[in-house]
Length: 427
Ligand code: AMP
Ligand code: GLY
Image (cartoon, rainbow, N blue to C red):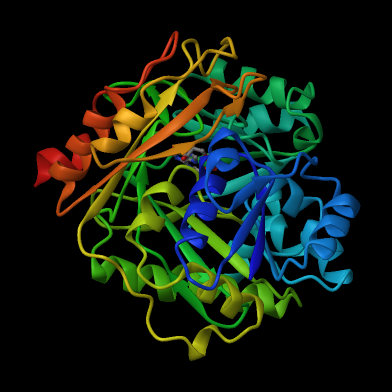
């Protein structure tokens, strides 16, 4: 079969790479893809915009594509699945109605309340003064969120009233575009975060291995938030007991509630959870897609052929599948970023040493890269590469990832040296 993957990040490179490990998958087309998908065997890039649904559909049909897998949230929220399905294509990823679970935090909060899913106490405002008065009654720390998609930048954990007020003003002044029509003010939760990505066909929901990512730019989890500087799986904090609770208290309730709303949700439901020191579990957010960079550590450990699972979701027969099989051991990924990220940075720097890195055993997933006119791989984004190690345990996986990334160079390369600090000191 031929599969078309929509997106251009490390997540999409990992999806294409994993799909191609299956005998059933002969070719992957990435729209638009990156330097990694351009140079991978049996993979090709198609330079279309991820929201040009008509062109994507034409090319998918002309190429006899059997399955479309959508990586990012923006095309899902804009209805790529609805459109491609109407053209007769099989699509992994929820419809526009289902994608609201990520695209509107207020909508997701209402769903959680109705379904009885544990989450932080929150209130929604359409106007700044009311939001600020509420903040005053609640006190700090407090969390201020823009309602809609803001590429991870719409959330402020405010430690002073002034920070909370500034965040409210920024949202209502339209700094996050249409994400700024509502503001969600939420109780601050402390603890450890864990990402549980689950596959669903709208009736059955099965979790993948739990993962943890490092969101901050600086070592010791300090500094600005980013799209993610590294990740590892399986996250030890998510014990089998905790995963059983996530299944019944979060995932099954969410799917039942979506179904009750008439939403046929087939794709990934990603629960971002906060685990309190006393073991309490609460949902911080839902995403309607695979996580990035979590996918880059989950898929290397997956033993069941990926396309079998994705097709079972799309064809609504996940309950008939045997349990998802996993390789033993652990995976860790370290993100190589452009100097200056998450602020301003330069692009077009030639990347060397990737082959040498791979001889250390790592898999190098490309994120922000492309091929230049001379067919050299150059930087093309803030997060450039995800260097992924696997091993029998976290020590091995993390050591391998660092041996690999140390062999890679480009002008301004930056990466954190402490990815996995929680799991390495623990074991
Ligand atoms: P979200 O997009 O809602 O997951 O928020 C992005 C990040 O902000 C999360 O991964 C957390 O690190 C942080 N965050 C969000 N909500 C809260 C909360 N209620 N308490 C503490 N931190 C939060
Ligand atoms: N790693 C966070 C996300 O994918 O939203």
